[in-house]
Image (tube, rainbow, N blue to C red; front, side):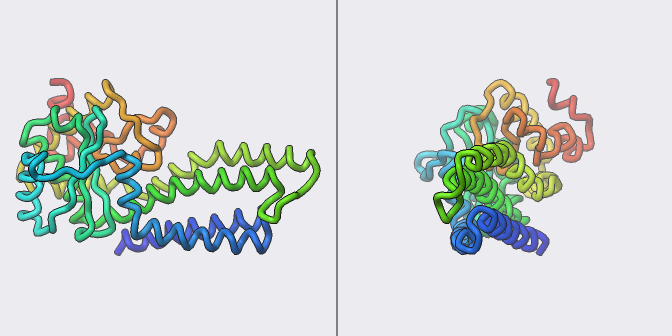
Length: 289
């Protein structure tokens, strides 16, 4: 219920934001245009946000014949969790990571990077996949997927405002050159602030969801130490091989990609704290070995 309310809030927020910008830039005509755009965006966010996230991550579907190890682990975990089998994907990234997306357990997808397949042993891989299925079971994949789409939409809105102000709004042909220079300055400011606004929307996603998925994953496998070991490896290797991920999808991954200034607005708890919660032991036992 909480995730459903948060999703509704995010969709309402982006609608209000579009209407406000449309009104400022184009008056009543701009509001109408922005409303239509917001309706399309909300529909797309709800029904297709998972496909958008997979596309942005360059994920490709894999068959049982291609990755029998992956299918065997996920099928075993789904049986324990009483979940339908999700669609499985692999991204071409060498940096080890994984994420789950979809609007509900019946429309869920799990993606792993090429790098994680070579890095983790079977127990550690099971821990990571159990964590991702924990997101599915806890039903927090919808809000994560919607937030990814809306974060990208804010940047799109900023670019739309940039061009609209340069050329006089949705009505076209506005102002003298001095007015247009002023519009360009304010539009440039909006372009700078847009990524920050996108990250702030991602922060609507509680950090506790990662702790919850860790706990659910550990319960499914009965082996929290394997997930703790996997998190330590993923954290170490993500520093050596940074992932070229979009800030709008960074919150989806089990270990948040390192994205320069955007990492200051992390949607993930620190890895050491996650390990300590899983094992009731100092994280140094796993991170420094």
